[in-house]
Length: 147
View 1 (cartoon, rainbow, N blue to C red):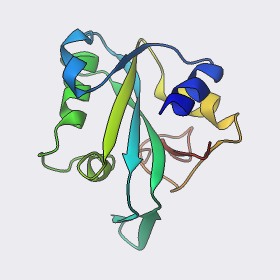
View 2: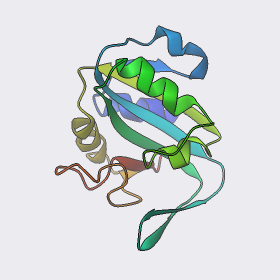
View 3: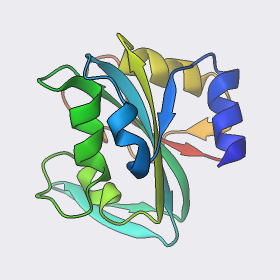
View 4: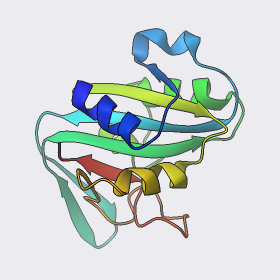
């Protein structure tokens, strides 16, 4: 995970890192976040009514926003719970990942994070429209780390 954190910093994104045990330190302000997810094995997901998506083992970054009540703390607390009803695409990964960490940025912009990360060739889009079905700027809010 150290290489992943360095790659995020190199892209120019900084904020507050957390893991499940440090959720209470997160702000309740609105913003955006990067969720770092490690898959130990390939995962097949049926997200787009017609095609199955296969994600290979490795590290993935999901860029999301927390603009509702409770802000960043509330949204990330939900993502870190293993037991929950699947509401968003990323819920299918957070319940199956082996390791997870987050970077929260007060007043951050999820689409800007995606753009900044994709300027580095070590980040690629593994699945079009993942987590971005309502976004007109991004092809996906899920990136694969190939470092």
